[in-house]
Amino acid sequence: MSYKQQAAEKIAAAINQLGVADFPAEKVQAMLETPPNPQMGDIAFPCFQLAKALRKAPPAIAGELAPLLSGAPLREAAAVGPYVNLFLDQQQVAAEVITKVTKEKEAYGSRNLGQGRKVPIDLSSPNIAKPFSMGHLRSTVIGNAIANIMEKHGYQPVRINHIGDWGTQFGKLIVAYLKWGSEEKVKAEPIKELLRLYVQFHEEAEKDPALEDQGREWFKKLEDGDPQAQRLWQWFRDESLKEFTKIYELMGVSFDFVQGEAFYNDKMDRIVQLLEEKDLLTESEGAMVVQLDEFDLPPCLIKKSDGATLYATRDLAAALYRHEAFDFAKALYVVGNEQRLHFQQLFRVLQKMGFAWATEMYHIPFGMMLKDGKKMSTRKGKVVLLEEVFAQAIADVKKVIEEKNPQLVNKDEVARQVGVGAVIFHDLKNFRLNDVNFSWEEMLTFEGETGPYVQYTHARACSLLRKGNYQPAEAPFPAEAFDSKEAWAIITTLNNFPDVVDKAREQFDPSQIGKYVIDLAQQFNKFYANVRILADEPELKAARLQLVHAVVIVLKEGLRLLGLQAPEEM
Ligand code: ARG
Image 1 (cartoon, helix red, strand yellow):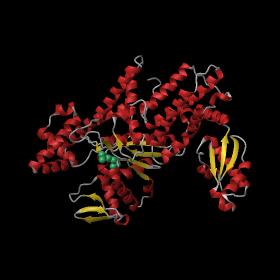
Image 2 (cartoon, protein in one colour):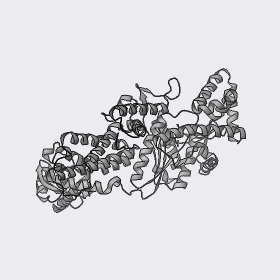
Image 3 (cartoon, protein in one colour):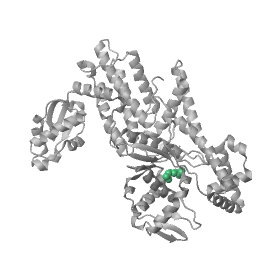
Image 4 (cartoon, rainbow, N blue to C red):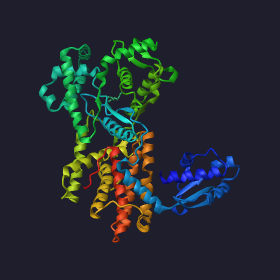
C-alpha cells in the first residue's frame, strides 16, 4: 500500500468516528492535496465536503479530525483553517518506497486490470508506394507506447499495421510503371521511384485525360484478379514493406499482424449484405450510403456508383474481423486528428448495426508535425525522409559521444539507442493532440527536456552504482540518509509512478510518463549535485545507493514504456 493510501484509510476511519459512514478511503485519497510549502506538511485534506453531513464549518471539522489521526506513516496532524495538514514519518516512508521498488523491480506499477484480454491497436499504417510520413511516424511512436502501457496493466496488446495497400491509385501506378518505369530503378530505390512514377502520372494525366481511364481499367483488372496486375501490385507492396521494415527495425517496433486494406477484400460483401439486411443502406447520387443525420454527421459512403468499396467499408470489415478474431476488451485506432470524422462515422455505423461492442472502440487522434510553423510534408518539394531524420539524429549523438566518452564500447549501438530515442521522446513528451514543432536543438540536447537527457541521467546513476560498488541492503537505513529535501522529492516522485501509469492508460496519454521521467531525472540530478551520495560512512553510502538504484529501476521502466532503451553507459 502506498503512503497516500495508508493516510487516506486513517482519515476515512476518523471521518467514520465522527459519524459519517459513506466516506470511503478511495474518495478521501482522490481529494488529497499537496500543501503549498513543505513547512505546512506533506499532505493536506480539505474538509469542505464534510460540512453538509456534519452541519459544521470546515475549520471546526478540521479541528475535530486532527486529534484522531496518528500512527504510521503519520508523524503529526494539524488543523489549519479548513484543512488537516499531515506530516509524514519521512524516514519510514522512504524505507517503504525504496523497499517496494527494489523488490518489485520493473514490475513496479504493474496491474492486472486487463486479465489478459486482447486490445487490438491499429498503428503506423503507412501507404504503399508513398514515403513513410511524419504522421505515420507519430502513429507508430504513440501507438507503440500505448501498447506497452496497456500491457503493463495486464492487457494483451495486438499491434496491427493496417497499411494502405488498396485503392484506385494502384491502377494509376501500374499504368505509370508500364509506360515509364524500369525494374532496376524500382529495385534500387523503391519508394522514391514509385513516388516519382505516381507524380509523373498526374503530370501526364493533366495533358492526356485518357490516362485516368486507363488507371481505372487497371484497377478494375486488379480487383478482378488479373495475373499481371496482381503480380505488379504484390511486387510494389513487397518492395515498399521492405523499406518500412528498415524503419521499424531501427525503432525497435514490431507488429503482430500486417493486415492492410487489401486483406479485407473478401470480407466486404458480408458488410454490404449485413447493412442491407438491417435496412441501413440508402441510395444517394448513385452511391450507397448509411445516413447518420440523427448524430449530426454526414452520411457514410459504403459503395461508389461503379460498385467500388471505400476506405470506410474496409474499416467496417476490419472492425468486425477484429471483434471476431480477438474478442477484444477495447479496440484502438491511433490515427491523425484529420480522420476524426471518419472514425465518428465508423463507430456510429457499427452502433446502428447493433454491435454493442462499438462503445469499446476508441480513435486516439494526434496533432501534426510542424517545421517552422508549417506542416512537414513528405510528398512534394522539400521531402524530409524519415530514414534521413534518424540517420542525422544518430550521427549527431555519435559526435557527442566521441567528444565526451571516446572510450565507450559499442558506441554505434549506443548512438542508435540515443539518436532514435531522441526522435521518439521529442514526440511523446507533449500531449498527443498538440502539434509537435520539429526542432533538432530541442530534440538532441543532453541538457533540456529530452530523451538524451533522461537516458544520460539513467547512465549517470548506473555509473554511480558501479563506482560505489552497489550491494542490495535492507531497511532500517540511517536517519540522515534521506533527510534532504532532494531525497524526499525523489521518494514522493517514485511513490507516484503507479498513479502516473494509471493516468497514462486511462487517457491513452504517454506524455504523462514522458513528463514524469523528466521530473524524476531532474530531481535525481539535484540530489546528485547537493548530497554526497558516496559518503564516507559505509551505511550512509549504502542507504543512498539504494535510492539511486530505485531511481535507475523506475527511469528505465518509464523509458521502456515509451519505447526507448536505457543504455547503462554513454
Ligand atoms: N493508411 C491510412 C492513412 O495513411 C491510415 C490508416 C489508419 N487505420 C485505419 N484503420 N483506418 O491515412
